[in-house]
Length: 425
Image 1 (tube, rainbow, N blue to C red):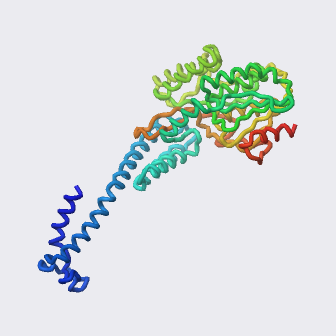
Image 2 (image 1 turned 120 degrees about the vertical axis):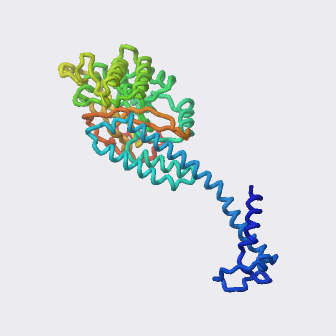
Image 3 (image 1 turned 45 degrees about the horizontal axis):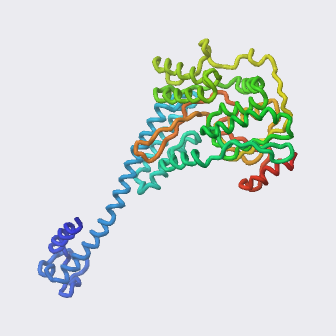
């Protein structure tokens, strides 16, 4: 192909080269636009003109792969942005949330800004800058996009490298319980279940330290299981009900969201038992969302089996339950603590019992929660989208937890971190 272009430009050069003298230099002022066939046919003049055009052509040809690469990533970005916009519009609670009137304005603005950035994309790095800018514009840790290779890396880490929940005595009558995630693998779940069995025996210990460093969340039902195993189910349920007496959630209704919740319902039935509160709750979500779909409802508040809106009944908290815990309770936190981990902290701090947070300020959540992931049409990654919205949550929109005690030491030095708590006792 290059040879064809060079031949073509060689012919053009013969008939379009500027007038040159016998030695190839211009015989007229540079501004002259006259041409002379004899001068054109002079070997030096023709050769110089051909070299000039050949050099220009080479530059053009060398740019072709760059242009082709840019167009490829621009095409990916255009397709993926349209897909993410559609997913948000059809499945996110925001577009139909009357209590968030600016969501749709932000969605339109963010999408237009992302579209205007398409022409700036030259390669994969630029592509991800545009994708991430669009996702981050919603200021929501639950709405995000990440590359396919991150998904594989995450799967590999979760399958083989994630630490198991652990339990150990770290100093005199002080116990450290490490909870690296609430999104457990089968092996991690078994490890936690063993810890739950020994929790009642720690009630009278000097102190219990929950190490939540790096815990990015998962299923918040596990946090409640931990509190229940330590304090008793009756006390934990009552305290949670008091904390959430004005809280409820609304779910965005769509066939895709329903399919996701059915998967979650099956998982909870397996993990906690078919008759567990968690399993029954998710079963109600699925049944009522099917009904909402038939009625054309877009945002659904969960109802009790009686047909009443789900809420905490005063009768549930008339009798005050007690507990046998006397141990001091600490939780080590950092900026990676989000989602179900913050729900766990909500429950701990909402107890009628002192709990000390130790470490650094946590991450924060918007009121949009519980996500599902979808593959981008380009195949470059996955898009994560929230499916429900909290109403009346005590912890505000994007409000983090600040530690009661700020730890200024090296978080990588685990022994020193734990020792700092032991020394404070």
